[in-house]
Image 1 (cartoon, rainbow, N blue to C red):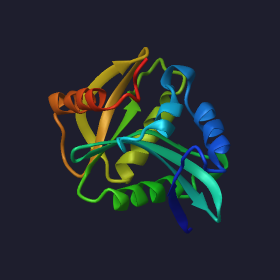
Image 2 (cartoon, rainbow, N blue to C red):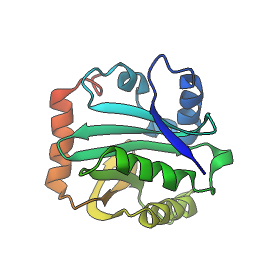
Image 3 (cartoon, rainbow, N blue to C red):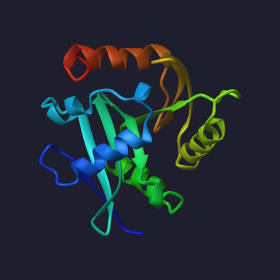
Image 4 (cartoon, one colour):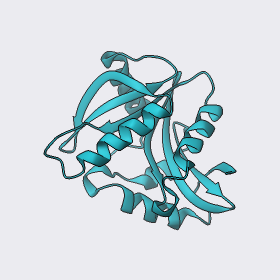
Length: 175
């Protein structure tokens, strides 16, 4: 499989496809204004599409600060899953961000969650892709998350400082 990674902007022809995938892949309580990412001129936030044979196979949205890049959204088209697209996309992101610690958040295992099996598969996917538990946990929008990291370690204080710095230096999360 040959996968390509390219930035998605407001002028990208595949933006409507990426927005459709965003809305289908993430429940409403986990979404926030993706338009702010597209309008961010600071370079703190970026949206990348991954493509196979020119077709959108998925996307990632990253927040960059210091030596960290936080993948806050990562989705693969349903018909492309299980074919190595996600693993290859993470490899391309790693190559794009050399020397940076890469973070992802995943929903924590919860026996009463309707999608607990999916949560376990997602964690195993990231582990196979070189991510490890960071020991950092938080709650947002009524859901519990844990941080996984590739390329180093991170403390809870450092993680929350990352978000504080993003808030202080960007308006992407402004009301």
